[in-house]
Amino acid sequence: MNRGKSSLIKGVCFDFDGTLVDSNNVKKSVFIDLASNFPDGRIFMETLLYRNPPLDRFAVFKLLSEKYGLSEEHHNSLLAEFTATVHQRIVDASLMPGVLHCLNHLTNKKILLSINSATPEPELNAILMEMGLSRWFHEIKGRPASKSENLDALLANQGLKPSEVLIVGDGADDQDYAELAGCHFQPVFSFRGTSTVSHRTLDNLKKLHLASFNGSYLF
Image (cartoon, rainbow, N blue to C red; front, side, top):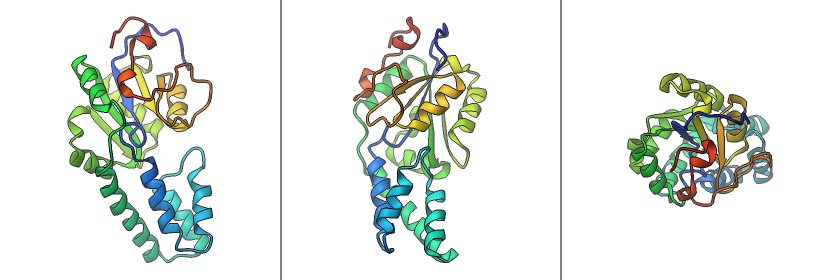
């Protein structure tokens, strides 16, 4: 990670699943439920879900279809069932601890807020709208672009330098693209990255302090 930056944090970019919403296990359970209809499907699905970097839903169902020789119709049916089931369960899911407090404080400090997720962008926008969260965010990015591609677009659109952006996430992919770009990174909740992160993992977003990243901007 690029250290020694003097820029103030002007933008915070959040992951979605497991960072803002308690939804990591939602997707895993639906994946496993659908795969369990096939011989040894549960075991196969679990191997897919623990890959790093994580696979998106399209890659998961492509590999499942290839393994079990599914027709295009069957493949599309599984993907549609997954999307509909996950959508409703995430809308009904709890926010992670401290989310609303954090978003409100950052907004009051005139920090640009964004989301960068592996969830398909149209689906992500629909979920956020139903949950009443859209209003907090300047931009919302998802698939089909990668998180690195999305970050490049966010930086360009918001006119920010990497040193002015804090990435908040729970995954190794969040850590990787933050470090590659030269952004700051804050691990949260069930962080699955490496021990190279210098900031301790937060168990509540109320504890997010921008001052710890630039030494002068008090949150």
